[in-house]
Length: 236
Image (tube, rainbow, N blue to C red):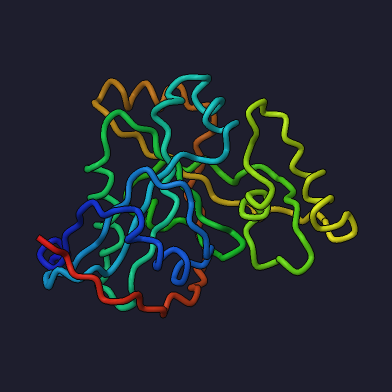
């Protein structure tokens, strides 16, 4: 069965992806979204979503290409589909969404090693693998372990007008210093994809500051994605 004859993709409003992100994706968090795409079956039912947004890793944007392409950076930050779809549906979804994005663009995405993910979908669609993300520690709050570290920082604001907001001190003041602790951030497999004409893609590859590594292999662990959002039909 040809996947392209059974499915198609289209842009969707960001809010249409929220039930999928909050209840179906393992992160349970809405990221920055600049572009959202839906995967539809031949009956015009939404069976998956893919979102792209501005990466939160500002140092990555600034340094990955020696200061170039900072305005062209996007992160493929969420990809989730219903269970039981045919083989190669995910790779079709990703490859088609990349074709719709404006050019030129540098796309980064991650596979979470703590979830035993290796990024096979990126390998199948010919992304460049650059190893694991750097070691890092995140602040956590006792009793809020279910929250992503970025969500914890959101509780005291992302920044102020002068850029001098000391989030850690505000966390301690709000929740008590004894309730704030640090944990190792799970390292993630980091992939890049280049969108542009032949000259642009060659320039991106030449300026990439990360070493290109062999694709990682291993047994993937599936997380529970059994939640089914309310049936959403494409309206014409």
